[in-house]
Image (cartoon, rainbow, N blue to C red; front, side):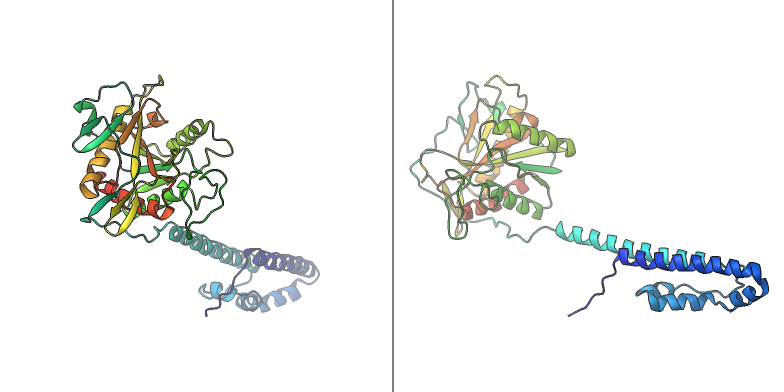
Length: 374
């Protein structure tokens, strides 16, 4: 066990103030005696050795000896060296040295906290199998193996679907419009519901899924902004208005951000619905892109770029882990996706899935993203 002596700067300040006051009194007394007996006072001061005075202080204040030890004390005439000034400068130097060391320790601690948690990265070349469920996947369009369920009046031409898009991979932003969405509880992830399959506990709702994706992406050396603000609590209505303000503020501080994911959990009337894919020996919740348009009347010039990026991600996912994604859903609402050219909702599993399955999904999603955004 290592014992560390902690030096409090405030305590040092108290010591110094007492010493300075004492020296000032000593100096005034010496001036008084000097006026009455100049020769006698001169003899007294000649007997004062600056080095001895500092040695005395070294023994009085812990830690001072180590600081003054490196400073050479040059013996000189008392009239050329002001002992009071020398002591104050020396001790102030010691205080600044301690303060600088504490700042360095704090900086090192902050850097350690920023280190990426150890994560298990996804492997490739694994066999995948979609687990059958009672909700069939429907689609209206297909592009290179990517299926799209078009809920708008737009004619999805090959030009619109062609994933010829390049994005700035400096930042990846993750947030949650419906932060409290949660999953089927398990022994490891057992929680108290604050609504039907909802909880404000960030360790058990979709924000925990976002944290897993964040850690995975960090392991691939991406800069990730993950916001866990509640937008659906205490009121569900107005969630998208509140998340719009959040994302706008985040973009002010992170201007070079093209990729923005709003992570959700799918919600349908059948609470047992659990879209799942087996990858290797692991079970992962299936994912689904929801892309908005200006079909509802709100301005949205980025919707085709958003769709192209979703197709690009899903093409790579089909190559590495077929079945990880369900068909892309295209809708008239814009879902705040007008803020970027590579924005989209990703629904991670449904109420019947477990948190364990959703965390596994993030491992494979991060691998797909890393392959697309090289």
